[in-house]
Image 1 (tube, rainbow, N blue to C red):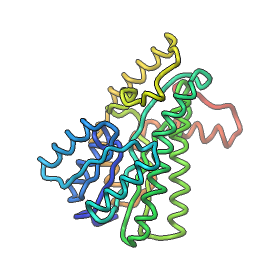
Image 2: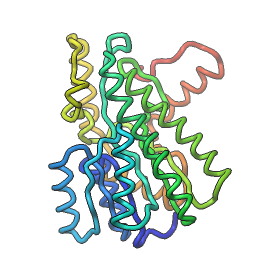
Image 3: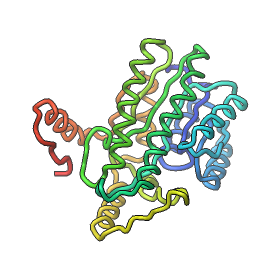
Image 4: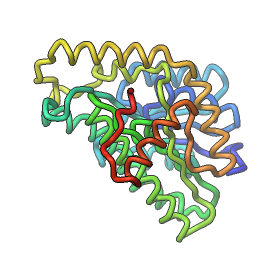
Length: 280
């Protein structure tokens, strides 16, 4: 995608963290921005701040786990700006724990946002982009947890592995249909964002019912610390996303030091040996 000026970007999870950073970066290229987020106050605040900075932006309160709300997001985008050229399926939540300890509610919450949110975004917005016949790009936010399988992160890894393979299949499907709409999968490691506190947005109907052990709480604390100590900022990652979109690159791996862990997993599979713990 080469021409950004006056084009339209839709970014889910756009009120904070990586979504906000991507919104700021693409707004600097002259794009009109549609921010979707489940937090209405944060969304309103971000829209106001971006407008004050000169961006053309609207906010749409959206729960991406719900098909009807993503469909409504698309309709409001078209009503406001007449098209969509960049879609960042970025909204995400996290829950740790051993896979046999996680509750049905845990699975429904994480998969609802991380996996179904991307499915709904692709399902709803791709036909719009194809019908337009102009340049377009879809960025699906996965994680290095979509390329490796560390302990204590089963639900999160399942959701992110799903996003990686969904996007790879999307790449092939698009290539058979058009050379104008492309896609990328974003696989960052630790970046200081609010995902470690994503439980603040957990729906009441999917509220936590599992008693967390001391080990669970220790894992939560260590993951939160790791996220907050990430060396790359959200703005750094947003710049890498912009470069990938501009260059038409599929894989966006922001942390090169994680590549050996990815290689171990690939070699485990090819050599049919037991999985190596990527955390050492």
